[in-house]
Length: 550
Ligand SMILES: *[C@@H]1O[C@H](CO)[C@@H](O)[C@H](O)[C@H]1NC(C)=O
Ligand SMILES: *[C@@H]1O[C@H](CO)[C@@H](O)[C@H](O)[C@H]1NC(C)=O
Ligand SMILES: *[C@@H]1O[C@H](CO)[C@@H](O)[C@H](O)[C@H]1NC(C)=O
Ligand SMILES: *[C@@H]1O[C@H](CO)[C@@H](O)[C@H](O)[C@H]1NC(C)=O
Image (cartoon, rainbow, N blue to C red; front, side, top):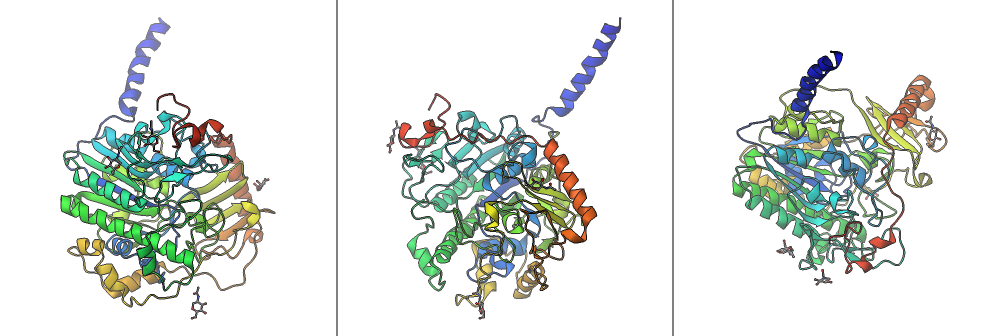
């Protein structure tokens, strides 16, 4: 009778597990679901927001969001587009889902593994309409990998890493002899009719349309994943409307001038999104987050003249300049406007944090932690964090933070960009009053009824956010020779290598890395560009060449 007994005991326990762990089922019956709007910049420099003290050009709408919202001062992302977006949408560390190595070139047949559950899937199962506007970059070689099959109800934008701002086309990254391919979709259909229109405007207009047409009996989950400030066309990378570039003609460096114009368009778009939320009457029920997927590439491939100064390094490097980017969040629930949140956090934290804000129970595996109460100021506490910024077994480099310690072993490009790049930007543009541009920005006006921004307030925020590097002589680090160690609390600029002073700490980190490498899911990258992907075979478009129906 053993068999029967086991049987009767087994059934209910399996049943229980299923009942509690059907990851997508609806649990929450919240009366009013907060809307979630995420505005993501691409490759924008971590120093390139004027509320941080950058005074070469202004970002008035972002600044107003910061002055009215919470400023995440230690917000970490992976150092490249694909891992960063994978981490955000899954709440998992890239090394736990095979996304730790490199980005997806258009012609490589791989993507974010299909077994991973994405944030929009969970929100959709809990009564939300889910929209992706703009960039995807998590794979499209087969149709199953594209956004409409990964939890988004609608998509308007592109599948690859970047497109030209006006023609919306891209060349191959690795293969030679490809045709240029259009990479722009409305849903599953390539959209040729918007050809010639500036991508940032298209994305802003689409976001506004989604807000205006939103059915308020549902929640709104809207990700606006901008092309700006990534480079566009391969032949003319920094693209912005000439009349906007003209506004910045006081900036000497032509590339920086165009970059300022690209960021200006992005900033204006944020203003329009706030205005549209207000007109629709849903602003007070909406949480708006802004951040950049990773630091700017100041030089080299896709360099956009963005600045991460005074942080070290840039996009794709193991240094703070590639991974630390300030995020700002606005919600009416925030108790103290302009609050500088000093908790070390990871982009994987947004998934659990938004779940908490929306009161959704979810039992899938997440690596991030919920920080909602801390972010809105209902609770203050500092949680010790360990964040693996990079664990790339193929390029062979590692970047980890644990409490105040940062460990770096190995690097990319032979250390070419392991230096301090970019500009402080102390050329001023004649707009003497930062406060007035912030106040009279669209975001500033829309939010003015909640709180009055003063120049004292802006000054206080700037001084709190100022990154001070030790004036001591640099103690060199060559992570190609041996691992380095920095105290990020006292040395955010990674100038003083303390590895020789802390041998025990170094062996702790060495052991940790070995353990994590053993535990990591192997990279999902299929590093074989497939000639079949060539747009020449697909009416000069980029499409899912591995699936038959297109
Ligand atoms: C292309 O996008 C525009 C702007 O959203 C839209 O009006 C048009 O209907 C789209 N075309 C197709 C073929 O989907
Ligand atoms: C540092 O990285 C190099 C290159 O990937 C590797 O060979 C070495 O084992 C690493 N050192 C430690 C202590 O992990
Ligand atoms: C900033 O101003 C100082 C003094 O006017 C000047 O020496 C320096 O070169 C400027 N730096 C930048 C990055 O423009
Ligand atoms: C092929 O591309 C052109 C634009 O270059 C477009 O007008 C046409 O509709 C496309 N054909 C098909 C079958 O998609």
